[in-house]
Image (cartoon, each protein chain N blue to C red):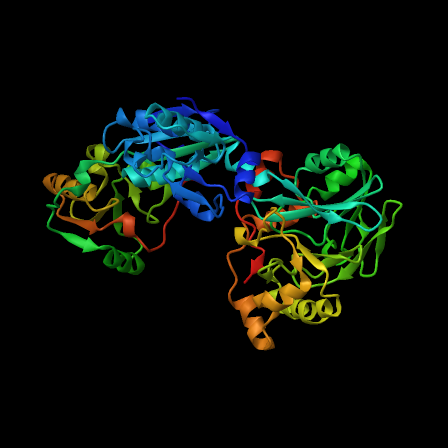
Length: 189
Length: 375
């Protein structure tokens, strides 16, 4: 089960309606929200991908359940072009080296649960930015904590929040999952 | 202004008659790049429908006002949607009925010629996919060769001209389209022939088509001489019909030759392909009219829409028949292969009877160009 903020039923609708409806639905969502689109038109997968690319929204993936295709889209947000403020950053490649050297390091993935589900660093823990407060007591304030998102912006915000909450060694990973070339895991198939 | 429908048949006429047509293809870019409607006087613009949801203003300047305008999509829904917007903006446009699915399946029957002692040979041109199939008719009997997926087209055509289908052939196990051969044979109680070397894994009964087989259609004895010609597949067979026509299957095309790799054995079969093209075909009369199972580019069509040329002309003009050096030939047919046809493994398994996808799935598997040739 993939977590989404809103579900659109486009089952039984033929092209162009699944995308016409998706466009309307996404207009009503907040930036960063995940929309689940249920469709039965097989052409909808390629079209949604291409539409997301041309509009800047993020296509996360598609899960097939019988004859129903469940597509996941994340509404793009302006936050992602903001200047980064957390001083302690590390590149993707260096994090990969740390992981190779030590399996037990703490990696927090602060993207939405649906983004995490389709592709994430093995052993990374899913802690969506919006829910970060609820997880503060689960981690050691003295430990090194690596924070990753798609492009390094949400993880920058998370790193600032964690530091403000008393965590001593918080490292923001840049650029993040958008350019991650190391191994990944999936929690949907 | 109103939105009119245009059928695949009407589009086919425009392609064959080289009429002018402006196509606005509103499928996504990757589908468009994979495959589109082509014609010598067809201009085409690709703008996905989902980039036009807010209106067509941005593309209005790119659409001519003095040519027929046709909006095309995968099935037809989006093309109606866009054609209506064009119409609201003051531009009269048609949409393609049934979309690219209908275009992919449309067959244009073209009469190739008369046979000795009466009888005719017809070519069915599948413009959307480049597949060519044949019907040979004599004295109320008919044979179908390399049929496409939908048996009804052939069964109805035969009934229109008052013939009964008695024999159905596939020159080889196809990898680019699903054969309707077995179904036609079932419907008409005809004999279904397949080359046994291509049919080792098939799950149904068939009559083994072997070099030297002679099958007679009608009382006027139109002989079909099977000629073993491996290369595209190990069992590939050509036919000489009425001593006049050479049905070359996927071995020899007008402007290209067959590719030997679609069953994963390019290195093994390239030698067979060369043997067939450079020795076996050389023994045939150069007056034979070559009728292949495919065309690759629209320029291969004759003015009447047929795809046919004298063997002697091909010996002179087809690049693939004019590579003296064997190593260079090998390099050309194995080193420079185009992408494989979409879903070709599943298509092969369907043609062997190993899998039976539903109609929609079969249609989807066939979408796209045939890619059976190397140039």
